Length: 443
Length: 159
Ligand SMILES: Cc1cc2nc3c(=O)[nH]c(=O)nc-3n(C[C@H](O)[C@H](O)[C@H](O)COP(=O)(O)O)c2cc1C
Ligand code: SF4
Ligand code: FES
Image (cartoon, rainbow over all chains, first blue to last red; front, side):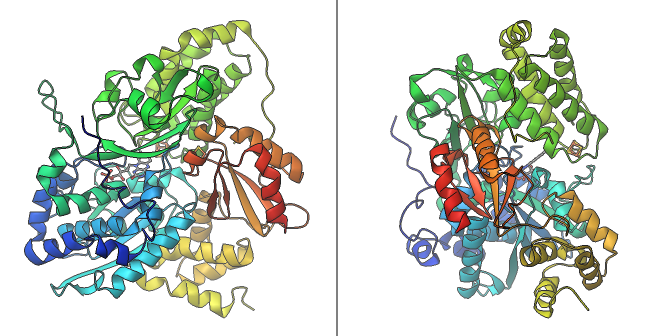
């Protein structure tokens, strides 16, 4: 098979990849100009629908379809929120896009606003991305100066303002309704749905929330067309009537115990093994992998034996993971204690649970306590069963919580206990006591 | 006497036209004050509330949710150094780095050195996992901060 030529990452690493001049010279804002001057907003929505683009933020919801949920003939305002909170552990593709090529993200944002008739777009950016903040701010200023933002864009009576809004270090602000609450100036407590944001979102107005990478894809679909996008990736599984397919390119992040951590753009459906061996330079120190997290820690764990799983919207669930997630693969080698991995993951969720729902707040706390005593060699065999039960009981899927953080907290725990049971049992039987590292913090 | 300078008040008010409700300026205002004063004192909370037609309790409610903003009892030093403790960094020495820095500086995460130069923090994934172990100096990533490069970083931040 011919090598795939990157599209989203095409300019990354090239000189002046951030500037509007470079972008324009490379055909940038051509898609926007064509859309605004020759297509109605409805036609843009139809194009995105036809492309089969699914959200890259984790949930994989069809983007065009989401846009059609906005009320028809709404007097406005309608808001667009760009989800640039990117806080799923081990995920950093939005950072690469915004730091290195901000205009393709901005062009997608403007296209999405045109399609949804939004007047204002807020880019909710995690605070830690200071470089992204500065490159995006510069890009926004340049776009205003060239007339791609502001009043009467391209002389077609289309107005749009884009503002950057910086977060303050809370993972839950990535959940779309937590994001909206945070934008409104409140604590980022996710809302009970329905109403969904499309009906009642930011400032109680219809709102679309889309991820940065999703919007970068919008730019290229409007530039290169539906056929191009659908020629990449994996078509729907004919045996699964609910499968909407996994079309288009995806940015995969590779980290952990590999020789070459980084970001690669590949057609959806690449296997973990290919990512690790070919693009990540193999497992470090000549060792073998024990397993990985396949798409951010919320998606669960894979064993090395499962590395031939394709990373598309269907693959990971076939081996018991939650889904594709963010496409961020973190490998741990054969010498890593699974108890350390589990503890690290549990600590994250206990720290980041917003505390609104009792099953999530208490469940993540108890899971952390048990994972901690297991890693110190003080676990009990029945802890494994209790951990699995909690993992099964918390989340929107079992119907006990408001948002999906709890599903993501439970999944790696369930996977760890089922897939690495023998190692846990041995650790508990051996009862090795180890002192935890200084400074690792208990909260 | 107001605690917030006229300049700071104007910077806060400049955000108001961006949003349909003034409450949405809460986070931008907290960031501006926090950057300038290295903490958000109680009186500043009251003054932000006054500017945004809110009750001080509403501002405090939001502020305290994030665990990011310091109050006047624990102001930030000149540089805030965040050390990632999440999975990708942990696998490449992030925990050891945090322990080492903590030891070298003689402070626990959350504290500031006596000379007021460095505030140490632990962080969850900073989104710099391709450069694990990763730290954040204020709001800029530093990649591949292995133990042998930690002293160099501290020297630089102490200057
Ligand atoms: C706990 C939690 C955290 C999330 N964090 C993010 C995030 O950082 N970035 C993101 O784009 N989506 C995140 N999401 C998914 C969003 O809720 C939402 O589905 C997404 O932004 C929609 O955009 P998309 O359809 O373009 O993917 C998160 C979801 C949950 C439950
Ligand atoms: S599931 Fe957890 S994070 Fe989500 S709203 Fe409930 S308590 Fe908050
Ligand atoms: S795990 Fe440390 S930066 Fe992502």
